[in-house]
Amino acid sequence: MPAPGDSSAATLLSHAGIQRVPSPRIELFQIRNFVDEALCRELIRLIDQDRRPSTIADDNGDAYFRTSETCDLAPEEPAVQQLEAMLRGLNGIDPAHGEPLQGQRYDIGQEFKPHTDYFTPGGPDFEKFCSVAGQRTWTFMIYLNDVEAGGATRFKVVGKTFQPETGKLLCWNNKRPDGSVNPATLHHGMKVRKGLKYVITKWYRERPWGWE
Image (cartoon, rainbow, N blue to C red):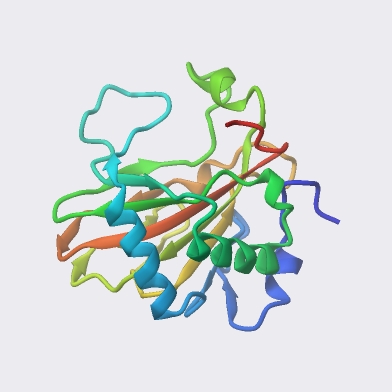
């Protein structure tokens, strides 16, 4: 049985339509049409309503490392509550272990250079971000729209690239089986070449979230 804050391959693969990337180096999955177009449109509206420049933990001095805009979605919004319930039904993770849903908007030329979602042990911000809720466990990311050109998510280590499709969900385990962080989860939100890209990201933690 998964630890609190964790899902498992068995849990995810019990759902129709989910596909696993065939690699021993990573637990990485996709499911198409996870979110319908109407809910995607409402989430896009919420992102546009309250977006701000994105930031990163463990700042590396590259002002162009992450050039998207971000929106912390209010938990009382009906669309947010609907999506949270859908994710709980998919992954079985206690919502208390989840960070608030976050939306991202990428305009032409914007990207998130190759990065991992876990906090680097020993890094300058590790204690700051992990002292309460612990390390990130799983990432669930949903594309909210088709993108005219560009905007793919590339997992270079395992040679897999995902194109944005409305309602498609990607998810991956940020840890190895022994509990250590998994560098094979390195991924690149590639530049949008034409149009806009909207995504929703949900991260889970080892312990209950606990932040205000």
